[in-house]
Structures are given as structure tokens and as C-alpha cells.
Image (cartoon, rainbow, N blue to C red; front, side, top):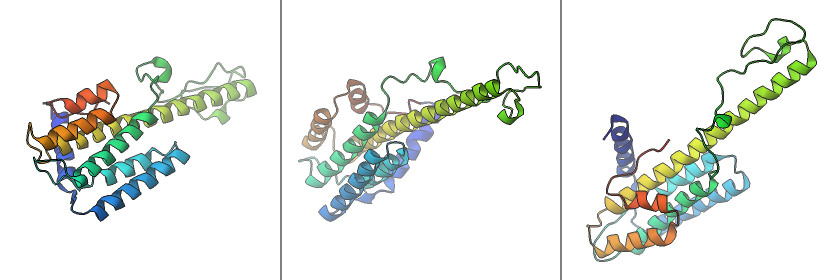
Length: 216
């Protein structure tokens, strides 16, 4: 395991250790209401990825009760809640976005166009320093386009990280939550996962013997 992956795993496990016990239907219901409120707000304001991040914190706040005879109603509810947030993160991503495509990679500073007014130019300069109106407008447009690329990359990275953290939380919940291997409870948990997740890549990461890590 790489140092970065080890640190990531340690943080996730520590976060789960600080979660509250899933001890009552009332606590689970409160978490469900809070998560649904965040997801509802995100549906109205899809630019605010922070709403999904807040929903994830709530969904992951309950530790599994564990057991081997069966998956308790409280544990099933907690798992469904975490899967709901995972699906929300996944659905919000742009499936056609390629972070390695040059058209999607922003630059640190934008180079101004040829200055027809023959004034001095420099990478990252203030557009007000360009006298020619056409050159100035072209430069302002280029800066705006670069800013959109920055915002798009940041959004897709946040959504990708959201999927990753949700996967880790669910993996720890199922495999490290007191459900013994080959137990009825763990099988029931994985049955629920398989019925809920249709993306084969995400499902494979959840079923892996190795805890998922960051992909971005």
C-alpha cells in the first residue's frame, strides 16, 4: 500500500470510528430527513457540490450495529442511506468529461493575443492594459473560458472524490462493521448493494477485498 493510500485509509477509518452508534429508529430517521433535505437542495442548486458533501457526512455518521444472523432494520436503513448518497454523487458527474483531454486542462495564466496597438503584453496581464478593443475582448473571453475550465475541473474532482469517499464508507460499513465473512448479515448487505448499484465499475470496487482508494 502506497503512503498516500495508507493515509487516506487511516483518515477514513478514523472518521468511521468517530461515528455515532446506530441505536434507534429515531436517530436513523433524523439522518434520513437531513440527507433528503440536502439532496433536495442540490437538485435546485446543482452547482453547490458542498450540499452533497454535507449529505455524505450525515449518511456516514452512524456505525453499523453488526451481527451475523441477519441484517437489522437499522443497519439496512443506514446502508441504504449511504448508497443513496453514493448514487447522487455518481449521477452528478459528467460521464463525458476527460480530465486528460487538453481542451479541459486550464492554464495557470492566459496568454494575451497579438496586440494591434503595439503596446507591451505579458502572460496573465490585466486586460485593461490592452489598448486595442478587439484584442482586449478576445483576451477577456479567453480568461473567462479558462475560468470555466477551472470550475469544471474542480467540480468533477469534488464529485469524483465524493464517489471515492462514499465507496470507502460503504466498504468499511459492510466489511468492517461486525458482519462476519460468509454470514447471513454480510450476504444480505451485499445483496442490497448489488440490487442498488448498476455501474459495474463501482460495484467491482465495493466487492473488492482491498479497500477502495482515491481515483483522482
